[in-house]
Length: 341
Image (cartoon, rainbow, N blue to C red; front, side):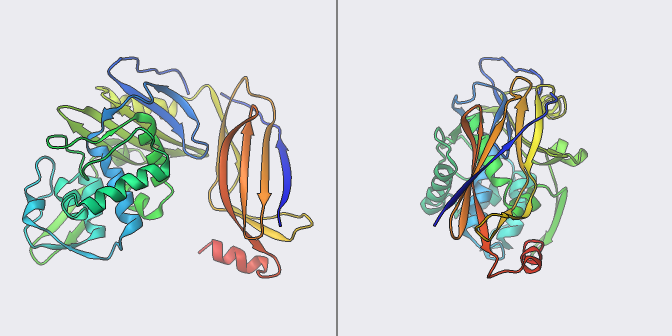
């Protein structure tokens, strides 16, 4: 049985500047994570080598398909990976969680190799399957590190923003990637790693990010900026002034009002159908000055779940599956306790 009911919200506006990076060999995008709306961008769908930002996909693939407590033995092949490393030792044993910190904080290619079984076919397939699931239509990944000396990892600014918005919903990924430092020990070594992303290290509004550079790809930077009800993914490719641009894109907003259309929590439908609706995260929609017309939201309510659809200017901008709970099975105090744990 399904029940459809609609909500209409009148929006007020305030006003992301045009800080355009127009170099024909560069690309950038600013994406709001909830609606996936593009606030600024150039060469969004042009393919580039993405260097170590590919490790975002490596990390979320490992988190979703393996236990973080699983132990991994470092092989000689892992230690021979070129480029950025934390200098793991042959036969050293670390947990996948330890390796993920090395991967995301220090961009360690030896950790990427260890996590992926030295770029095993199985792991690389999982990476590409995950990319397809996310909707990365113009991306292909052939290794877990982003190195482009032997193979090529190709993606676009738009696809990398989609990936980052997806990864940002995973608590384990964020906890690891947002860490300013991490230390761990093995029988052979003691490690202490600091986060290489300068904005994450010095500005609490930049929650997490990932750097990337090779001679072929040039500079690539991904940042997740969160402040108040604003949650942005910023991706720049081949931008020599990327640190400053990321700060400017994040903070100098003039075109959009970021409207929270639903705050996370449990809602009583107060309809003839007795369900609670669980909104796991704030749902935000960026609105321009000239979009002062109504936003329409529809819940397509089924027995065990609902689909939230948000339309702007008669176009679908958000579609999200939401958990629902029958009031006869759960009293509200118990539901709230479950969701707050």
